[in-house]
Image 1 (cartoon, helix red, strand yellow):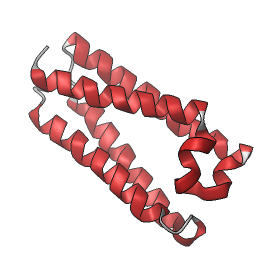
Image 2: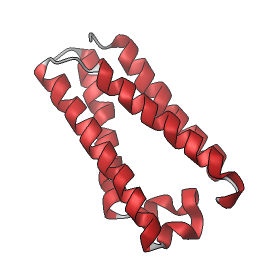
Image 3: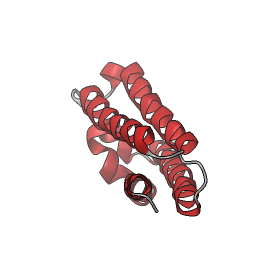
Image 4: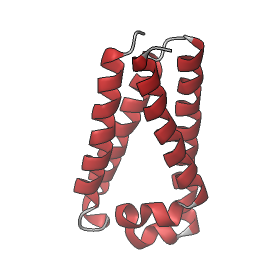
Length: 124
């Protein structure tokens, strides 16, 4: 496996781990993002759904990277998910904790940038 694919698998593996965390402990991982709403069972449903998205999307991308299949389409979908997370958080704005929007923009923006960087160097 090329160094670029190894980098891709590393980034993708971190995303799977994040997804597992969202599924297993949504309240804990969303405290600064969603505030007290993250403790509500009804809120945990879509948070777990986001976690499942992370696991499925990035798990499939790892399989693609390991088998020599194209990885860029998976990375593009990952990038789109990060942008969607930023947009959804920004749309909620003042209904969220005071620093939720800039924190989400920073975290998801950094993830999107890292994903774009990996996509730029991976072979396909």
